[in-house]
Image (cartoon, rainbow, N blue to C red; front, side, top):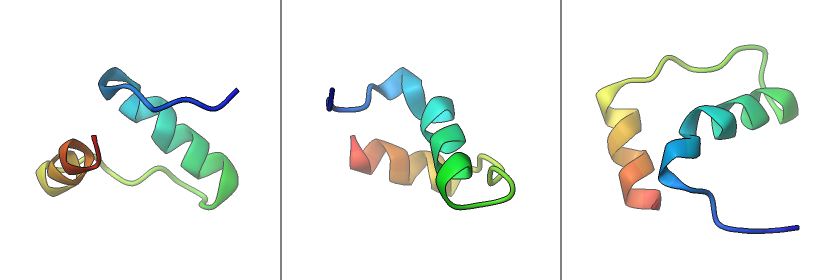
Length: 40
C-alpha cells in the first residue's frame, strides 16, 4: 500500500530513512521541522 505520510508520522519517517540509508537518525531541529512542514 502506498499513501501520503501524515503530519504526526515524522518520527516513523525518520526511522524508515534510518533503515534504508543511514546509521543514525538526524537530530530534529527547527530547520528540519520547517522542511517537514513544507513537504506536507
